[in-house]
Image (cartoon, rainbow, N blue to C red; front, side, top):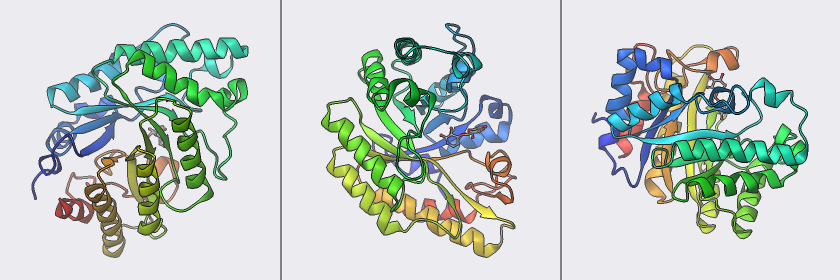
Length: 315
Ligand code: XIL
């Protein structure tokens, strides 16, 4: 099978992977990354707690190393994430700031970070996970301080700092048919109608083998997003297996990976297929979902799994 990144024109389609800076030390990891993928997403290093651990003190070194790797290997960078409700620094988490101050803090962070990466980070997850599972607004520190308007403000600050960046709203459990998927649709529609600089929606797609959303429902979501003139990205794909990775489970997993690949090959507004890691050797799954593992396209020895071959077949 040819490396994934050779199968598509970069302008049409990104095959991406998330990683932490430390993974670059693992030669097999960095080789696989550079060989197969044309896009990378920092798994943690561009989150607020990493970039601004103390108020006004920005630490870009780790994230910069990822950007440098991308540049050296002709890869596009997706910045993740400017505004989120977790992995924030203590000073922000525990601070007692007025509404005005919170807005100022957000503006300073977004302006500094997006300006630092202007011309180097083409896509940004501007706001991550603003919705709860029922489709209401999650009562994050931002929501509590600023109300719903924090979302529009975040996009405006990012756009001002880099007018060429492509700005995205990102969330999970928004792939198929659900109150949350509908809420995400309504949210981006409203932002777009208000003239907020938003260019796409990211759906994380942390899926579970055996209980995936129906493909037709994902397609329906993509189509209504397309009608809004927005891009649709699969931003954090993995498909976790409960218990053992039996042949049957791996085959089911491969089928679902293939469906996502087909959707991205078919729809011209679907230009990202990014997996949340490369190899099952390093994945957030076992520590976050007890009893689950094996969500990625390469196994712990970097052998391509049926999922890899199934994606490869599509292009
Ligand atoms: C996860 C990382 O993979 C972990 O290493 C970290 O401990 C927690 O965050 N949705 C997101 C990602 O948008 O940022 C999360 O990443 C996974 C869920």
